[in-house]
Image 1 (tube, rainbow, N blue to C red):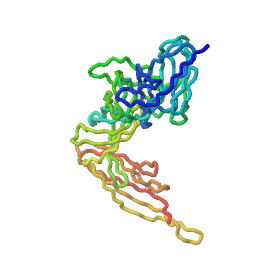
Image 2 (cartoon, helix red, strand yellow):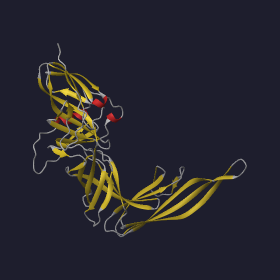
Image 3 (cartoon, rainbow, N blue to C red):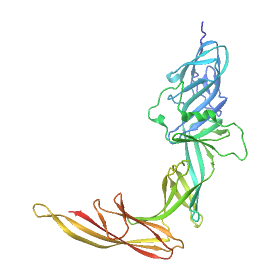
Image 4 (cartoon, rainbow, N blue to C red):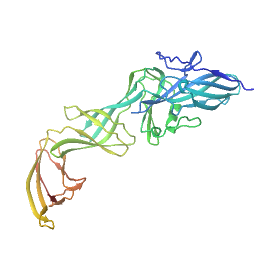
Length: 393
């Protein structure tokens, strides 16, 4: 005959300074080892804990609950063959009702995994712009936020770059399997601490990138932990873009083997005395992104409309003028007051049905006529744009 060991949920929730445990009758079960994987922009982390539960031979029913745990994808797994999981069900305010079959009486290890709310991470950069080598070197800083009041002590910490699929159609419980994205938490490196701390270990999983700290850390409630991953260098090109009367400095950065999270960047050009604040977009492998900076004083661009001419009128059936075939000529004067050659991109928005005329080498894309020139230091160039278009009255 099976024995039933029923543990009733502790209603009182302990929010002390220690790592929050799982509530059982008149006791808290504190984990022996904890892994925490923080997602970005989702206010949650995937929490994996190894705990030990007392079981009697036969069927055991108990309830588990703790602050901040979300119901979606709650996961329980025995870590020994003498205990078998029978079922996991939501018990409302009582947490989760777990049924386990034990082959003998004793203390058995279990793995509990669930989402916990109140976590986020972001990344900031110090960037060194080497114009001689056409290279951008990023020195990243990762900021992991524990927005909850619960302290997490001595945990193996990871953070995930990539949009997870579970935000679309979450399942309530996973008893036999869970996403491969959640596996790395169980395979964290050994808990050896070294001085200085080793950099995070990077792991690629399909469309995700997971960073693991190879040593345990504390992440207290309502605190932020700063981590400094290794630096990365990227190929770089630069141009000065003139569009709709506005001049901007544009850095074109190409991603390498691993994706890089977007974030705020403090940029230090090696040949200049200025420091710039800029937004680094998400940088994917092989992808080129733009970093927009204020214009450099070394380049000047002047736009002058030389001529506007109506070439031919179009009439309706009543012989009324309804449109003209028109022509416009625009001159751009580009001046380089610096001491190095610079690329200047000229963009002029055109009417939808415009046609570029003349022998100048302009391109047409997304309603813009565009041309890129290289201008030598201390020189001035004049660029002419001519186009015809249908002017509807």
